[in-house]
Each structure stands twice: as structure tokens, then as C-alpha cells.
Image (tube, rainbow, N blue to C red):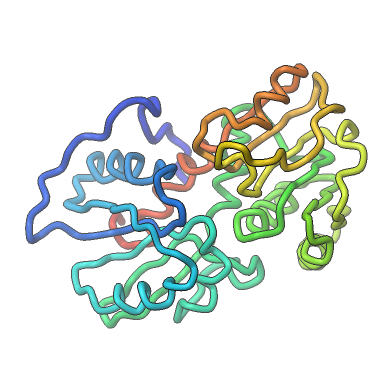
Length: 282
């Protein structure tokens, strides 16, 4: 994939595009949606490629997701959408076709609407996360990794970390059975990675790389996704959350001397893949 720098600093504003009857519509479905950075990032991609398109944030509750997707099928000037928390797992059952690893990951985060209304899904979070780490000089190969979360983004990241050559991967989730199920699927696909699932964090200080792929830290007052007392210099602590840029977990990790890696690079490194999947760019 293209790993060039894809956007300006996050505080910069995307250029305004004149919207006309020719403008192609795209969306991002989330709940909540105010924290998403994708519209700004995608606007930069559209501007660079000369695309007459706009990506609109759409706040959709889980109980209305199917109805919204059914409505989007009927919008002839609608090209596709990005699905984020909490919709990635549910989208798997709402697409007509799944490309790539989405089926074994168990989630979809990017959907293309075909001319006949069919929805074609793909999962791109994992490659975005790993590429973001590598662009920052953090190599997951050979590392002992603790991954918090077993949902859609976590599943994609787990498969990608194993594919990238992680030595060992421990998946942590409040519901241990979900972590164990994900670990079993990753281990079956990548037997060289020692993968396990658990409901308790254990010795957090014993890992080389710790990644949070839960929603804990998205809202003010959220509990930390894992214990932080044992974090130390020499470790890397990474986030999948994009806003706030420094979550409470990253702040605690930084205070203890660990290297921190924010969530926005995951989006930067997959955004052009998303635009291509949705048919916005060639």
C-alpha cells in the first residue's frame, strides 16, 4: 500500500469543496460520531486526487443500522461508507459480498455500494495499524504483545500483528470467552505466533508492545483498559482511539517512561485504501 504522509497536522482544516448535484456522496457511520477524524482526512485525499466527493459523518445507533444501510442502497449518488465503533462486527452480516480477510476477522470497516445497490465490505484496520507502527519505527515482528479488546478493530489488529511476525500475542477482554475465541482463530491462521486469550491482564510489565483496541478512553471518565502501574521505559503503548489524541492510557504510559503511539496513524495509513475500495479513486 501507499505509505506516504496523507494529511497535514490534525489541527489543520480540510479545504472546503463546492457541493453540487454532481458531487458523489460517501459516509462514516458511528455512534457517537463527533470524535471521528475521517471526514477531514478523506477530504485531503479527495482534493489531492481531484475527486468531486464529500464524506459525511452519520450518527447511527446500533438498532437502526440495518435500516440505514437499506436506505443507502437506494441512493444512486452514494458511493460507500466507512463503519467504525460500534458497527464493525454487525456490518459483516449486512454486506452482500466480503473481500479480503473480513470474514475470518469477523468485522467490516469499509463498504462500497455497487450500482445495483449491493454492498461490498472489507476490513482495513489491521494493515493500517501495523503500517502506522512501522512508519513510526516500531516493528511488531519478534515482539511479545498484549492487545486489549476483542471487537471488530481488535480482531483486525490481532490478525495483522500475527501476520507481521509477532512472537507472542495475548488478547485481553472483559469477557474471557471472546478473547479466547479470537485467539483460537488467530492461532489457526498463524500457528507460529503463540496466541492466547484471557480476561485478566496479568503482568503488564512483561510485554514489549501493548495496544488498546477497546473504546475505553473515548469518553471522559472511561476506566483505563488495563492496569498501568507496571508500565515502564522500554515498552511501547499504542492506541486505536483517534480522539482524544492522547488518551488517559497514553498519558499514564508516557508518565512512566514508555514510548507512546497514538491512534490517528492507523487512519492515515489506510485512508487511501478506503478511498480505493469505495471506488472514489483508481
